[in-house]
Length: 296
Image 1 (cartoon, rainbow, N blue to C red):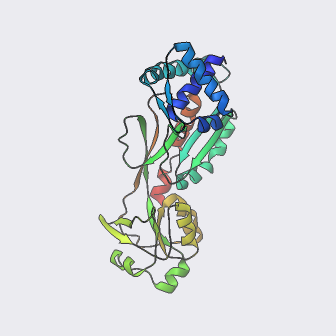
Image 2 (cartoon, helix red, strand yellow):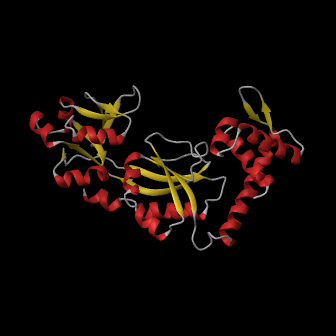
Image 3 (cartoon, rainbow, N blue to C red):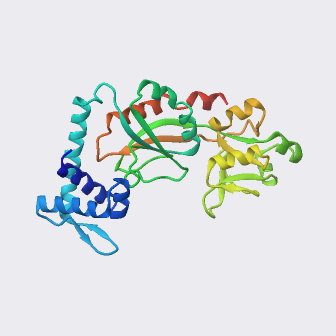
């Protein structure tokens, strides 16, 4: 790839994440090399692209204008390489996917099928229950829970993700089985919540505050706490199906109504989705766990 193309890719990334050190680390280059590439783009087009201070890198109006051309050019190059290059018949390369913990673990267990069909793919899973910034974190695809109203993202509905109230049989033996939703207030509820935000469960159409001796902002930690007998947890059905079948967890209040989580896949609207990322998106759509959700 020519020096100018590399420099243009560097410029685009600097515009997305205006931080020399961050971009240098991502591109496995020195701070000096990144600065030199930016100088090359500025010299080529004859305009300043960033206001540089010791603390900040601020894009100029010219940088905003050039960004549109740069993205279009690089997208066209990527499309041409996909059409004529070795990836034409067998897409290959790295795909970065932002996944929630529960769905991420579900998909990881099924990636063998995708790897067997497309051995040239590399999947980098950025797995967290926090909502990642698609552009800043350089994600090709990311999952979102609930409606997405961001015009900068292309949205693909995946489906509803069912949830279940569960507890370890030993916990229920010690504390009793709640006979109604109102009785949850007398139990240890394992809260999935962030920071000091109150934990709320919506059951039978009514929102209820819940609390207990343990809470976490990670669904897998909540899952393991339930398996340890710390209380009643509200978890995705895909995480508890095997535990319920093996008797490690028991269903609590099976007749109550718990609305599923609507799951969407998103990717940036400003750039074309590469064929390798399209393969992963299609895999996620085809393997979304709707049947598991309905059967547990």
